[in-house]
Amino acid sequence: MRFPLLSLLVLAWPLAEIAGFVVVGRAVGLWATLGLVIGTAVIGSLLIRGQGISLLRKLSSEGREGRMPARGVIDEAMKVIAGFLLFLPGFVTDIIGLALLVPFIRNLIWSLVGRRIVIVNPQGPASNYRRDDGPFTRDPNGPVVDLDADDFKRDPDSSSPWSQNRRIDQ
Image (cartoon, rainbow, N blue to C red; front, side, top):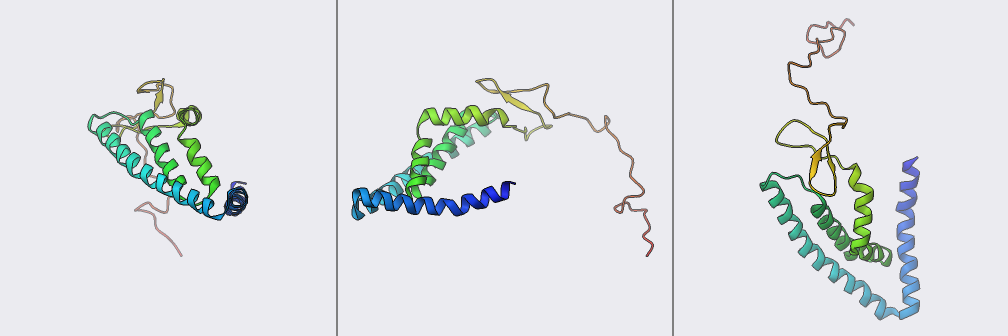
C-alpha cells in the first residue's frame, strides 16, 4: 500500500513545483521569480555549509565523549535538511525548508519522532535507550535482551541445507 502512495508523491511533487512557479510568476513577474529561486538556493547552500560543519563537529564531540547523539544533533540535522530543501529549485521545497528552520516545527517533529528513535551502543552489547527530556537512559522494559554466550546455545539443525554434515541426494 505504501508504494502507490510513494509513486503518487513522486509524480505529484514536480507538478506542484511547476504550479508554484506559475502562481508566483504571475504574481511577481519572471525576474522576481528567478531572483527568489536563486536567492533561496544561495541561502540553502550557505545553510548547508554552516550547519553541515556544525553537525559534523557536534557528532565528533559526542563520539569523543562517548555520549549518545541526542536532540542537539537531530536539531542540526533538520537544519541541514532545510538547507538542502532551500537549495532545490521550487517553492514547495522552499516552504518546507523554511518551516524546518522554525524552532517550533523542529520541536514538533522531535516530539513525534524522538520517542521512536532507538540507539544501539557501539562499544558494548545492544541496549535500548529512551529520551526523558535529557540524556538517553537505558530502558529496562525495551525489546532488546542482552545475553552472554553461556546464556544461549542452539544445537545445529541437521536438516538445514547449511549444515556441514547434510548430504544432498539428487
